[in-house]
Length: 505
Image (cartoon, rainbow, N blue to C red; front, side, top):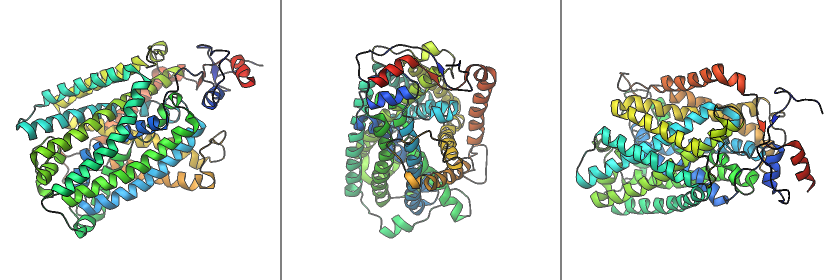
């Protein structure tokens, strides 16, 4: 056998040897075929992996935190139709990603398809989630005690939530799997509680005509069509995260099948759950103008307060806040696994640190780096909420750009972009679904950087283009100064001899 170069095939680096008496499972055999030795215990069942994606999507939290975006840009009409249209196309994206995941059920998921941009996006997403927890606590204080928290206090709470997320993730796979499963049932039960509470207690129920046809515009733009399209951002923002199941594939049983099913199932479930919750909100909203003029940290608190009163508002906020906390925790689960995958393939300095696992099977260095970055970014909220929001809005675009790259490759080179087909395959529908996903992703990426209000001022300017430009610049500088001389593609962590012996077993 001749010596292999980086351009010819992945390099071989022996990081350990599996027990010669162990019979590898189908998931481990597939991982070995890709050149990786199994380092994690496969403790996650379908519900655990599905719960990871549900946590990341955070249907209750995303819908609650971003509801006002659609409410002020198109109103009920834009929210209802935007949700269903975007859910359909996000399902197409999930199907496209699931097909790829079935062939490459490896740790890090999208890392293999997009690298640093997606990794940065996941850290930013966790930071955003932790600040949202702080804002829910601030809203609870405002509603329950009439006390308005300062930005410093909110940032301090966000620090605490960041650190708590790090501690939970340090415990390891079993704790995260149990948390994800619990979140799945909490989301279902919480949605039921919120829907019943809103529909039963709201003093005035809106008509079906209002829910399905009422148009609202607080943006200043004159084009009704453009205003409704701006409302689409609420749906896309809420539904991002289905791919998170792929990032823990090496910790799942039968990952080549269960991870893709979790990717798709999380979108289908979120579509249905989100629709039920949205309809309850629209039927029970008492005054859109009141929500728009609210002084609460989160506008959804005003909607709850008008519809169900003070005490039940506290209940509703607590239900969503706990769901948000679990979503934030799993975001750091994802980012730490991404950093692990990057380091394993020499795409990140400090390989020995980032690939080290503690006794709980957690890549703890990646966890605490995510916590550190989250705490630093949270400090920006003290100085400028606009700057903080610009940083975090780049995460939503970065995630969509991360979806675009592998799906575009599948669209342009359908016959050669996958070495084989996994147990989850779209068959003859693969290209049409990938093509539709590509068009929608490009459209959303453009929509995300357009001004959301007019006239444009320094206070309402959409700085997302600046923030995402910064993320891309960081990735380019990292590649130019370090990556191009260190990263040559996937590194085999299992010796060929060991793999050949295992395949004969």
